[in-house]
Image (cartoon, rainbow, N blue to C red; front, side, top):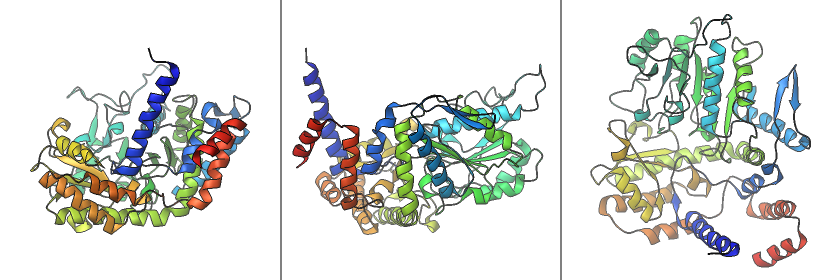
Length: 475
């Protein structure tokens, strides 16, 4: 039987191998992932990662239930201010630890909100109708009845299923909403909650169009935008709050620079007719959904938001340029690229391709991985099943942050097309391409970062002999 030291050494060997492969040899194109900066990573494992800081508003005051929390209390306050500046909105709830939890917090709060006038003895009802993007048309899983929406919407007595209606899509572009059909659907169904956002996300959402239709309804529906995939593109893609959205949710680790957690932002003020909804959102965040809200990643998110607010414009513009350059180059090499060609096939970080003439999406994704190009297979809107997907979904955000530009994605498109069309082996070509892009951009320079990294590391592990050994080994 292996000793503890042997088990640990074996695990470290595997960690080292995986780190080297993913960070030095692969081109990562998973659209829902990113590598945080070294400073963000070290914040994640700093002292707060093992601590608690439960708190809630009671009688107008924020009450904390643990001692020793002054630092993390100030971090949370500053992070709310930084994210409020990023979204240009007054309300930020930070305690959800994932995008899916952020959505569920809103759904729970919505149920409490619609029951606010319920008289004693009356049954507690669910949402009568929710409108969202259909899962098979790119809708996000967390906004589906099988996801976070489970148990929060009424059952349709005619179908026996949850009363969820989907945005209609255009026949000429299955990735855009059919706004003509949407007008009639809104008037017929009268949803109480409208949820924008997708996981297969190529084009803008018609937030302003819908807001114009429903703004004078009494009661009017709450408009929510799940920006999980495009949170880091807030502004360059669209600004939902300016278009009439009430709530934005998202995860902070896809196009945003942060660790894995979630956020809820809102324009709701104390004077708003939705003021009680924000109170319910806070209550469903804690104690309704969390106890410990992962303070290490909270600290890391503040560091990441500093970076995002400093480099937002340059990063966002380059992401869009890279995505369109990559889509165009793939198309020129005979790959069927999805999306509206008149808009460069994409307005986001994502590029979606149809590979059914060369194999299933499942098989092609595996073939690409064997050549160090990491993607994920994707069921397209006209596919019958995720098990036999005909598409591949890709995102340029992580490699954009490592410094790749348009011409580099054109080279990558050549390699990807060779794998897809010719079943060629390009593994070494991809490895050599990745070796050119190992230093992270849109953050402090390496020269500025290095001494700060050591300061954090030294404060996490203050044992003098350990630090001496660490210094010796890295030199």
